[in-house]
Image 1 (cartoon, rainbow, N blue to C red):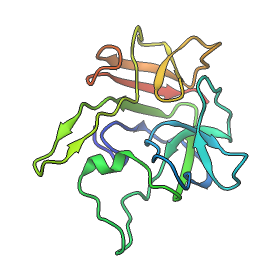
Image 2: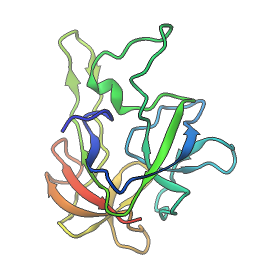
Image 3: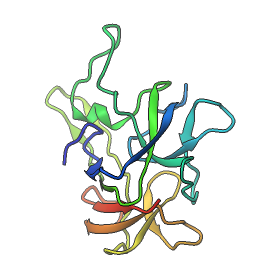
Length: 179
């Protein structure tokens, strides 16, 4: 399940992908997680922001956050240590808003992990699969992907495979983008 986006998110089928523009991640604050719902930030031209809870996907304006050049670093920056470093985007760096009806992604929660060198890697919860079954929609609650009802939480994608329970470290889903 590894990819260039971390161990929690990746593409299964990317041929119908649409990558909207080149926008920068926010200048300050916490780094955004690869694979979250994002949109163009109208208050800050040229930048994007994480989508608010229950936001509807808008073709050309919102999508899944991907920062593909995260592994490219200058000689003045700290090097990547391992695949956990790929999970978060770098601040104030170019990214793309990714969409494309039919593109298939996977999402996987990760438990806290202690590396051989003693570093503790924080858990990542990108998904809550409470009551989610194949065929259900997934929407964005402001911090993770959740089962959507189509009205208060709009569908961003349709589930094609699911395992694990609730927001556990074993939760895993594959889904097809719907916009």
